[in-house]
Each structure stands twice: as structure tokens, then as C-alpha cells.
Image (cartoon, rainbow over all chains, first blue to last red; front, side, top):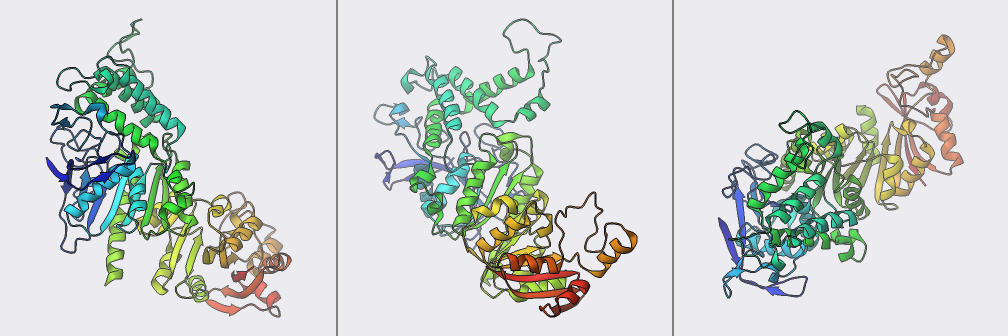
Length: 371
Length: 198
């Protein structure tokens, strides 16, 4: 597993300072001689640095395998793709699961509350380490999109292109509510023990599984669920008049919950959802989102999905409006799909091909103009 | 089409900021980028066309002129172009008002319903005109508000909108429209191209 130790002190939004902490990352493709083909990808709530290919830890496909790889939207034959595990995460970066050398136990809830801003500032160090002066692009969906917005506002001219996908500039009450539901499920699991559970023995798996089940529903659309599952029964010909998983949708959710606990730490789930809830870029800039992008020359391409009710088109459009208000270079399209918020992770050909063409054309346009 | 682009491109000064409202596949945007040093943006209602534009790396946003022009600040573009779509809006009046708010100058092109072929169709056949520029039948046309060059002149006069330049297009023939030849140009022009300012 690739990682760097960030020695430099990072002042967190909560006021605490951290230093000498690990940041795990992965790269795909090669950095060219001009060092102008690097793309930094930010992962969403439950993602990690393994965007493409097979995740060596879970042995499953990387979370953005549809989009990142040779010949794909983020074409690794052409671009050098970097992805880091966010701080607060549980795939090698500094997080609540990191072992505290003083106690030899996980830091747990003694870990400081972090924000999207802190995540982005931590990852910036990786660019210094990789000696990348300027990125061709930053991209990400959902919480990854929030990091894109924060990144461009913190470092206005570090990336030529920004792709915030299915995200928001300000986490809505509904989204905070769903996150709170997930956190309460974890915290009501008696194994959670105020977050000081020992990962090796008893984890709050039940709570985390319920959190995942609830969240999973929010990633799909009603129509998508209806078409995929309807009222189909799970390996039975009739109702059993009990509380087993009679319906396929129940069985599916239970499965999603059970596989999730194998790869994710409950405390990380608390910290990362908290970071999302605290995200309000508009408020950071005194109620005027345009100010967040005031000095940027970055080209924006914003994408939303018709059936995404978690980060709906209207919230994505607010970002477009803020950018247009200051004459920024912005493209926007709402992709038609019934796959809900999850669309950005799935095989949605329109979405994948538009990104691919946009990146390839923009990369050559920028280079041609330079000559 | 080429002639229309030529005329529009001539209207536009170098190094200006341009918004193409109803930019379609982005062919006018590409034409301008190729022939001028301009910063050009587009607004388009069709998802398919927006995707095509973005695939070409053009800065186009999905939206419609009747609702989404609001987000652009006053005078935020040097030129706003509306090519052959005015007649398709619910309220052309409001759209023109918004174009003049957003753009320092506005370029509008209209298919001329005053062209002699159109007049003849109605006069002789007694049927709604179907021509090369207006290929739709009455029951499937997206054109809600057809007007003639004369109508557009009257509209601008009533609204106190200055017509800086007006050009007639008839096939490949490009000519100026003046107050003295207006009646004649209204009869022979297929397309009218106007440079407006509030």
C-alpha cells in the first residue's frame, strides 16, 4: 500500500493540529514529461484510494472501475490518475482506526472531527510529494464532488479543469437527517462503546450494517428499485408470515449491509458523514457561493442525474448559477437515468462517454493553444 | 447557414465575451472560435445537443432561455446571440428583454415570414406555408410566434430598442436593410439578421 507521512502541521477546522500522519494513495497511468496530464480524483463517503482495477484489500473491483482505466472516461493510457484515501477514512490514511502508539489501541472517538476542507488540505501535500505543479483536472462524485469544489476554492489555479459530479455546495437538511440516522444506528449498537471498541474483537457491525442499508436506499431511485425488485420474493413461492427476508429487496439490503462491515470502520463512518454534514461552502464565503470561485480560471463541468434525489439537479444547478454569476467557464448537463445518486458509480454510457470526450478534447485544446 | 454565421461573425469584435442562446450542436460556437479570438458560452435546452457540445469541450450549460437567462448578471456578455429561435419561445418579448439585459449588444436572426414564397403559399394555396427555412406543418411546428422583418422592426421601435445594423439574407446574397428599402427586403429576404442595443 502506497502512503506518505505528512510531517507538516495541518491546522484543522476544529482548531486542533495534526502532523506526522499517514495518507494512503494509489496512482494509475504515467505522469508524462511535461507533467501536465495528472488528474486528482476524490472518493465519496465509503470509497478509498483504489479507484480502478481490483482493490487489493477487498479483492473486488475498484469503486470507479467503470470510469477509470485504460481507454475509459479517465483514460489511464493518457492521464496520470491519483486517488488518496481521505483523512478520517479506514484504508491506510490517518483515521479513527489508526493505532495510537501510546495506548496501542485505535484512536477511536479521540480522533478530531474533520471537515471536507481538512481532507482537501491534507491531500494537497500529495501533489507536493509527487512534484505536480499543476493538475490537468480534479474530479469526484458526491462527497468527492464536494472536495472538488473545496479544492478549487482553496487553490484557485491548481487545476485546469474541475468535474464536480452529483454533489452540492451546502449539505441539505435531508442529507444531514439521513447521515444522523446512520450514526444513531452505529451509536446504538452496544458494541460501539462510545467509539472505543477494539477492532480485532467486537465491532458495532449490526449498527454499521443498518446505517449502510438506510444509506443504500438513498442512493437508488424509486423507479430503479421497482424495476429491479418490484415485489419479487426471495427464493420462496409465497409469504412466510415472519420477519425473514421474504422480499428480494430485503435480502439485497441485508447483503449490502453485511458485506459493508467487512471493509469499513464504524467510527470512520461517523467522522466522514459528519464532515459531509458540516460542508457548507456558501457559508464559508459569507453566503455568496460565487466568492468561493472568484479568482479561478478553472474550467468547470458539472453533471447531475435526473433520478438523483439525494443530490438533486437543483443543488448542482446552484453551483452553475454561482459560477455564471462571475463569468466562470462552466458546462453543465443533467444525465437522464433511473439509477439514482449511484449513477456516477455505475455503467451509464451517456455519462461515461461525455466525460471521456470532454476530457480528451479539452486536454488537446489546452495543449494546442499553448503551441 | 454559412452566410448567417459570416454575418454574425462580422458583427462581433475580437476578444469579446459571447453567449450563444439556443446553441444547438455548437456549430456557430465552433465557427466563432475558429475565426475570432472570443470567449464563447452556450445555453441549450436539448440534453442530446448539450452532450454533443460538451463532448467537443464547449462551455455549454443545459437550460432554456425563458428560465435560465436569469442567472446571468446584467451586461455580463459583450454579445448575446439568438439564432433563429425567437419564434419558438412562449414569450419572445420577455426573452428579448432578458437578452438585452445580459448582453451589451444582441444579435437576433429571424426566419422572415414576409418572404414572397410564404405570402404566395397562403394567398394561392390557402395553406399554412411550408418552405426550406420553415419546413414544419402547422400541427407540428415548434414555431409559436412567426414574424416578418417588418414586424420585428415595428417591435424594436415600440420597445425603443436600437437596431444598429440589419442584414438581409436571400440564398447566398447578403445585403443591408435600410428604412428606405425595408418594404422590398421584407418581400425578398429569407432571413433577417439584426444587431441590437438597448
